[in-house]
Image 1 (cartoon, rainbow, N blue to C red):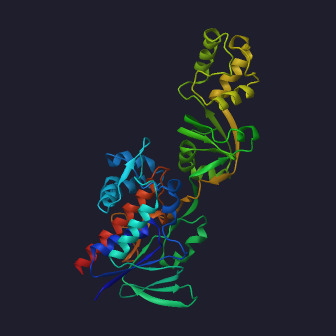
Image 2 (image 1 turned 180 degrees about the vertical axis):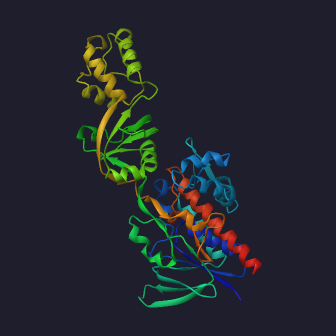
Image 3 (image 1 turned 90 degrees about the vertical axis):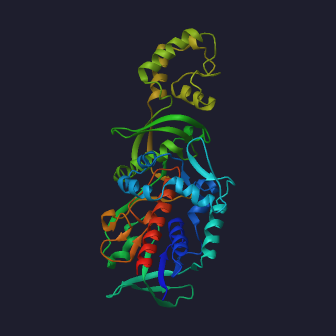
Length: 416
């Protein structure tokens, strides 16, 4: 008699669990249940349509600092299935990955469809059945083991099916009510809040710099110790880029408490502080005395940004360095190293939605992803209270957790 695994959710973690379980367990029937009309939708849009599959690392310890929530959990999870294992898994199936200068890894095709096609081909190869536009209304554990599920399909007819194993891989939810359907399973939920978002700033002068990027900026939330450093991009609504996204992830709960109304301070040249750049500016008044201050700046900042900072400091770009007053130089030093903005609201990063929150890790056996309360019930991916910064870390969590579930079910099935 074949055992049956129902995977709820047709995203990265659900697919990875399903195809690996079906491959490892020949006597296991595997069904993916997806409530929408799209499969692997986050894989499709990730990395601007290229799919940031994982992040390059030589050791597990390289990865763990990238998870503001679930760091210790991910340490164990990555030892079971690391980013190197991810690279090997896709390579064995003809999908080669490349590493970019910042460590992000993409398919060499620069097309997320390569990852989607690979997972779909694996599902076909190992006979994984996929039910689209089908919602799971209820999961009822049976007294003697196993489950009965009520499925609501595209024809609106409710169907009850049995399962020996269930893997819940439904992803995050913007509201805690999105987890209500799990309440009868005794699952404890950490209330979700958004992570990985950009900062909305209503400054029209700043918006005029849309598209300007700086490779190294220090971003600090004022009146806190929270600070990040890295590339920054100015958008038509405010600030984005890796430094801002990382800050939004690390400070997700703190910024939620502030209702996304706070001040952010930027140091555009973080290898200086205010007093050291003041001295450097004074030196430049002598060294570059006859040169127009707006022609070229000594800090390799984009020219549009440099002239914007001059304007904020009440300095005309056609002034010579020697004609800039001491007062204006003092102001410029402050503007460069402590440029402050009021943030009012957030914008989801592209189409990638990530939450901080979900199923509490205390509810599961972290070695197997199985529920501590109900045997045969597993969780994988973002439905768990684990989230990473941008850069391929959230997908790695999906692969690692999906793999762990598949491995444990295969072991249980073989022993049965």
